[in-house]
Amino acid sequence: MYFSATTVDDLFRRVFSTLLDAKNWVTPTRGDSLEITGVMLRLTNPRARLSRTEMRGKIFSCLGEFLWYMRGSNELSVISYYLPKYEQDAEKDGTLYGAYGPRLFGMRGVNQIINVVERLRSSPNSRRAVIELFSAEDLQSGAQEIPCTCVLQVVLRKRRLHMIVYMRSNDAFKGLPHDIFSFTMLQELIARSVNAEIGSYKHVVGSLHLYRDDVASAKSYLQEGWQSTTAMPKMPSGDPWKYMVRLLEAEEKFRQGSDYDLEDLPDYWGDLVRLLKVFSLGKNKKTREIAAVKRQMKEKFYNLYVEKRLRRPVKSTQSPQFDLLAAKAN
Image 1 (spheres, rainbow, N blue to C red):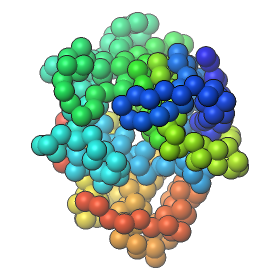
Image 2: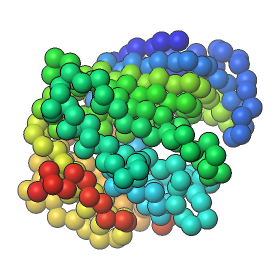
Image 3: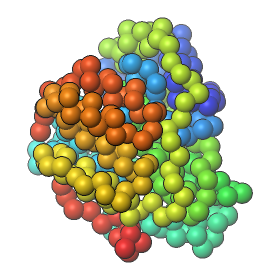
């Protein structure tokens, strides 16, 4: 089964409609769900990675989860600040066995992101630029949760970097928006690292499913309108990793209740820091301060998400240092 679209909202509409029509109920570990198998989703504009709807426009949790990956962390205390639902998957020591960050940057002692970047720099047409997330040992680990994502592959052709992701399992309503956001952000980071433009994104899923508890929400989503042609601002050309390090510094500061100086940050990266600040302020219901940050945003694209925080501030919930291409960031 194959779906292709320009934006995630166009993809979601087709995916949810197909799942609701499938009427193929299965009962795996986490409860009854509608399922379709062997699915490929193609996003022709990976920067159109964020839903523009009221229901699925989840920029703050998406950005928080992506930065958790980039931090190389497996700590529940870091990700539960954005997504408390991770608490159900945590081990007794407060870590997440299946966390992607340690696998991206330290799978058996190998920094897979550096490997992929260096591979493409030395051999641009390589077919070996593959990142492994699922491991053979995972099935016998006895962990609360193991990775849903198996493999990421990037392919550089005609100065455009394409990404193909294979997932064994994917929750279409809650998980898919976060997965597409994180992986296309990583795709754009790698593209900038090899001086390429971002190409298409393909998301292959063994079991794509919609849980019974989300059926009503999926139907409501299909009745909601959105802007189907809007894309996230373009990541600036040049080495992105020194700015990624600063973004991670800012995220940690806000999560710990401090502030962060945006001095010398380009507009693109500065806006991402401002979004993190908005989320932190929203946890403390500081709507006046959020409004002030909104006025400082350089891109109007983000206004939709900031305005949602002004309307509906959320309750507060409660890092490891991380060496992200450190040699290249200096």
